[in-house]
Image (cartoon, rainbow, N blue to C red; front, side, top):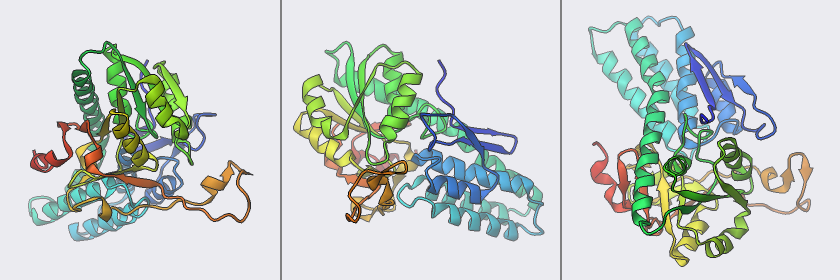
Length: 355
């Protein structure tokens, strides 16, 4: 069975699967401009660091296709930069959109300096650059899946099949397709090396129970849902072989920001002698920040904690703290960081930055 497709793009037409409606219904909504994308990202109709960047950039491609070529390349590049700067503000913790914006701005600068390229051709080059992100992300995810499955299998060579625990949603719904951490799990399943995957519900937004569980059931991958508070007991009871999570931003030293609850899983994995992996494309690594203390952490609305849908489930008047992410120190990432370039220890990332 094919993996889910959450982003549909064809000839300037962009649609995304509204993840707020999952698992009850699968409804695609149109993204007609950058403002639509910003709102969809902010409201978490689309989420996952790679998918956020892709949808943002494709929304700009949609606008550029409709835009008559400006009189000058400078005017074109100002338009592109203003739109990208706006998109970066939608979710501040994930670095993928910021890095994608920086790459596009650099392309604009090169095109502006190239006197042999006119404004119309420059616009087309920018559109092609933005549209290429979709196919590139799928190729990167497939490579992440293969590298991760091979490394985990090698480090558990005495076992026929493995038991994996994962957190939040890192699959086709969080990427252009296949996924990062869930992509590794898919590759293990494809190689007949997966016994069972345990997915946390991922409170308070329940991306695990709503989205990851949906993907696993959809693809008939053997899976069990556990509450976040059951993780330690599950590691002990089921003899988990590895924990695999995604990342919204990785600092230069390997400290990793991911969905809230990841840090505690890393601490528990260390205590239970369970390998802990982070799976992410190199576009999630921010070499400009030295460590996790420099990663901005988004705080989410209190209603995510106090309400289930429209029903209040917490005492009225209670104060809330609802960070969307936490930071796992590099020393707790014992398995390694799985990228499209291979699996690295956290302190091995920098030499591969430009490879």
